[in-house]
Image 1 (spheres, rainbow, N blue to C red):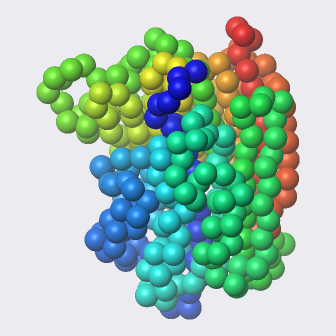
Image 2 (tube, one colour; image 1 turned 30 degrees about the vertical axis):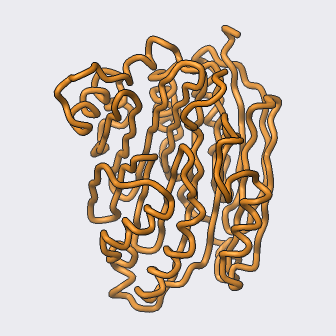
Length: 342
């Protein structure tokens, strides 16, 4: 393992808002001007490198991962040494100017490869919890923080969830959508090598990213998605896929010694279970990692059972499964797998 390098493991923040004005509610947070968005990202220490949107939401590829803006929901995911939690106060402020009030918050992350390189408030999960507690409004008084362990000392899943009373009351009406977050380490060296650019290739980040999507098979994971991709120089890759009101995203840090890739997608409990199995298989086969951890977040459904069905046939051994319940979030199931080659 390298002494220091780029931190691939992302921090992820999901904020939900509510408002009374149906006109604003139709576009809601998407009405936030780009300059305001840039200021929020500046506080986090990242920038927009590419963007695409549709009738449902706006998708931004960032210099460090991704941002998705829906009318009443924001998902921001950043890697490296970004200070993600510093986005909370300005996002709440901008939402307030649009007549929207925060009603729930979820923060998740894995174990950092280089924890000592992380700046405040990400120096420890304890510090992150304190920062969240101090920066969220009092109406979000149903709060819980937990670390889901695994049999691998290098992998655990950190979750902080907070919501107001309206979200607690809605727990009797489960959300049909679920989120799957896949973290992959020790990528196959040959496959990781496809995410390095040739010196002086004469391409910009967009065209080089398009080429990487094609030669790696990423473009085939969900053929129906509109892909917004970007290749970094000299290496690294990010992609956001949009299909209707759902997103998927991939981020790759290919350097040997601390190679990492993530895949995240959203699905519905009413989808054919075989579809998510195929999607997960395709995503994992792009990288053939030695270690995989998967977090599945869902209310009242056993989607997580599809995960092992997808991953074990790829030469991976199931190692552990941990579960916990969170207010308004539902169940979070954390599973780990290691290569049988080990």
